[in-house]
Length: 215
Length: 174
Image (cartoon, rainbow over all chains, first blue to last red; front, side):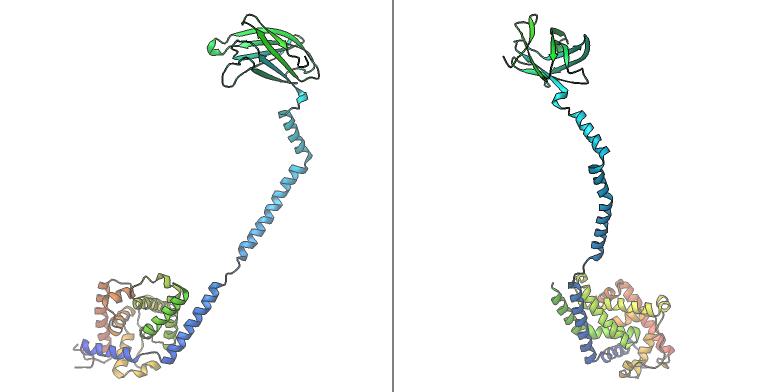
């Protein structure tokens, strides 16, 4: 038999080896000291928040590039006379000054239910424009209520004599009949707003008169 | 858990397990200075990755870290030997490491034989026979199944005896 002949003998040798192989106390203490020192260094390193320079620099560069490209666009809008004029032109075409339009307002002073009115404007005996109006909700224009019509220079020449024919218009559901009431001549002056009223007792006996606010 | 508490915990574990971990590493690589470095790295890594410790047996967890670091070292130092799972190839004629001088003759023979078997066999024998880990603990450290631990231990012991026989330390009758 030999010293390694059985497993028990091997186990004894293993245990003996395990007991003999060891770090010295000095090595153990030195190592622990070093471990704790490295942990302290890592703590202080992790506590120190590094400044994200890359982020700041990238942001600054992006801001400069943005300003370079965007600023000229604003300058063009403010300084470029051509584009400004275009804007003004568009604006004026959309919003004419009061001098460029004529408003004719018609008041219903009758007991008749009026659903809609139509004005036909003649100038030099030529029909220049027909404009109809009714309440948006389809309701009747009660006594005392009015409907306003607005005309622009593009409709007809806003100075001089025009003939105005007022027509009551029934809704299509009720037959869509057009009932001409009156035709009168109106001399357009510097006055831009004209007020008329429909008078009469019945549909067959109606007329239109101008309301003179000075009276 | 505060950093200070973790450091305290690592210190406690160090006092309990550092020497055992050193022995395991030294038996695996046979280099005292390198073993000390790996022990130190083991506890530093345990501190840095304390959040991954899910309770249970800290000894197995620390040994697992130590084993991974040891494997990394072997892989870097001898990549071909690592992939071939070859032994350390220490012979009796080689200069005996200073730390082995404390061992008697038979223990030195056993150490040399252990160094000359496959790394996986050496691994499981050191943990089971020398460090006296249970099969379950060994399986955790090696990340093996318990069955694989048993099979490799059986084969490892057989290979170890064969190596001892080859070196003339045992009779052929065993």
